[in-house]
Image (cartoon, rainbow, N blue to C red; front, side, top):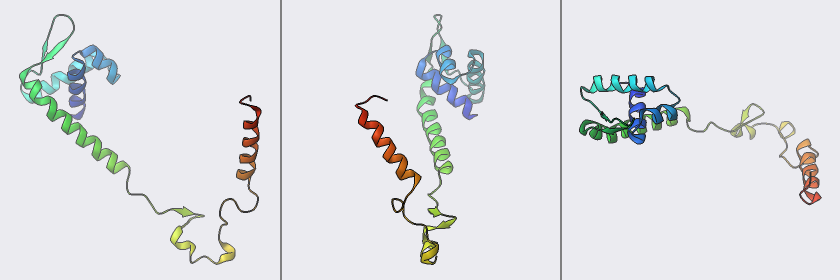
Length: 137
């Protein structure tokens, strides 16, 4: 069983149409049909009853698979999100972590934003002047 098969199944089950499912998945309609056929072969059961007006309905086997496919795909998507977004790394400034800042001599420390002159402060001031034109640019 392939995840792409389950994704195609989920979309066809939602839309009850191979054509609309293909459009939503950015696949061709024959590609979605092939995905469903592969899943039906893996499951050993027909999952959709094709109707004459280009729509389909779930078979009893398809109706049983639908909530399971939703759970499987949700777990996979959660795992992908969790792995792709690991715990936040320590904040670094000037190549050092914030904890290292305490060990940096005071004369070598970066000054906090807002002290002294900075381009950021200058651009903020210029931006506020633009807003004083009564909404005109």
